Length: 500
Image (tube, rainbow, N blue to C red; front, side, top):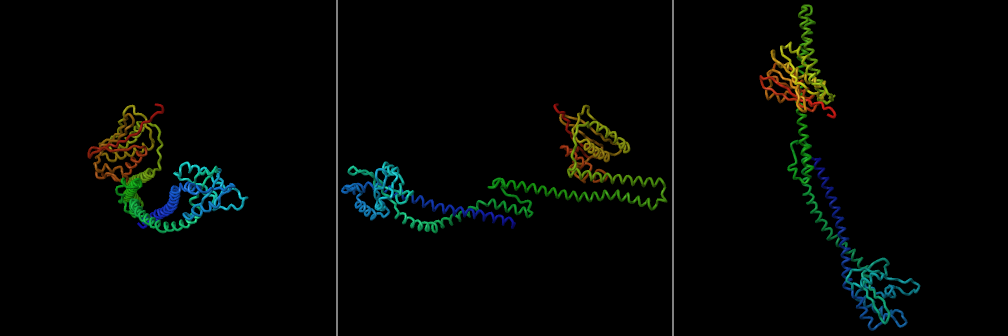
């Protein structure tokens, strides 16, 4: 769980850090945005409040005084008094006299001492737009004292004794800029250090609570994963479908189910492996003990034994060695099938011909046990598409099994028939049958139904048959009842001729 907690803490720290950074960036952006739009609002309000200032100046000052002297020069004393009166009311105001082309003819705030200085101009487009809208629109004009900078203004056109021009008043001159800069620094400090920090702390607090709430499901998943990692294989994420991270929760639950299932299968395999060791130890020990015992007898009492007794002992040794060889061969064969080291080489062949060959071979073994071996084949059974050697091995195991459990006077039959798509193969016997409980496990490795027979063995024959059927993508089933014999059936695919 320590790893899960560490992961959760790291994740939360990262989320909180990112959120804090976003809050800081938003706070700074908010401050600058607020200051920018506050300044624009102030400028727009100031311009509308003073939109008629230029008109009032013309009406009041130009009635008894002319902006120009008789020689055509600018009446500097008039503008000096004008500027003095204006600055007494508002130090940020700057008054300019413009010609009809926008040339600055005179202003107290500008130096006109050097006649060689190039003329200065104000763009008249904003001025005319301002006049045409009667100052009802927020418009910025040129600042003669700061080239390229725009300022709020008031403007009016005059015509005095045939002389035309403009009165252009900058409402926020350099004095305002200096004061605004100072106030801006002070306001920024108060807003940033005071209200902004308080706001950001409050938002951060709410953000952490929100993050904690929003990551509740994620932390629950991490906790569940940690518990599962520690060995609690039964733990699952509750209500995975309703989880905020439903896809992750559902996938984890499915993964956990799969892992638990695989763990159970591994445990089952381990149990079966132990059974194998016990059964193989017993089944190997019996023939080895017989072989070893009779060999020792021959070595010790060879001189006292007759030829008949020696032949009898050798026959027993041979039978036991053959049984041991079959057992080892079955173990090797099954291990290869289980490890999927056998690839079926499928080809078309006649299952009827294969069945006839096997029946003829087993009839001699049947005669020795007084068991009748017969073939029941339907006419016109088509070719099948399968691995002929593996199918033959499966039929041999089924015939061996049927012959082993059929008493003298009984019978074993191998039947072959077909339907529209498949060929059915069945091996029936008149043995003691298999009860329903044992039928569920006779195909399991190292198990067999021993209650109905005195036969011994670890029961790999049917397990091998099952694996062979799996390689052919088919299954084998048993139909049996106690004292009524058994029938093992499986199906093989018909061989489909190309273009047919």
